[in-house]
Length: 198
Ligand code: SF4
Image (cartoon, rainbow, N blue to C red; front, side, top):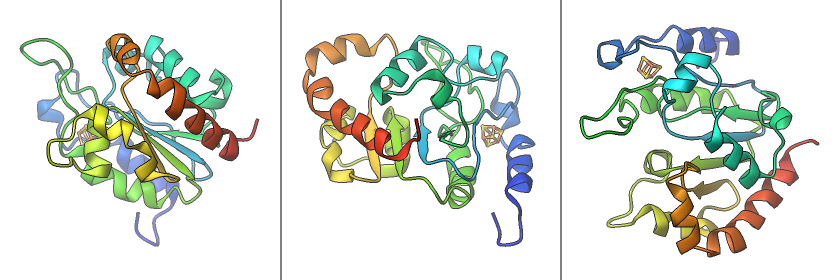
């Protein structure tokens, strides 16, 4: 966002984006929740087909688990004056030949995160949900796995907290990594409580 561009104009540019339209099987539909007064930024991966159709990110079992991790009720999570939802890919990227959603389009985060972050001056905490968001914001440390990145969450406090993606695939990971619920979640919820109005 340039100094002269309004927040509404920036948002209109994002919503009209067609940069990688040729690569999107369902076409562009940038999905995000933002207002300049938001205090918590949730940065995940790209939307899936359900979110693409409904226009509502995180309205699924993964979102339920994520809200539980954050200690937020649904009304708080979907209040754009409190919470910004901006993935590292804003449009559904399609499927991989071997199954599963494709990675977020690589053009998207470098194009839109810098101006959107600049337009969100009240963000006190960014939650990096999953490895794509961690790769973009933290860079991939040589050989570091998602688990190692999340386990080192204290390195990025107080501004950033990495978590796994809260999909059903994470259930086994949670059982193997009990420190996540015992150590990280209390810190995450305390940070969220500290910045979100009830
Ligand atoms: S994925 Fe991002 S860069 Fe591509 S069309 Fe959607 S908003 Fe634009």
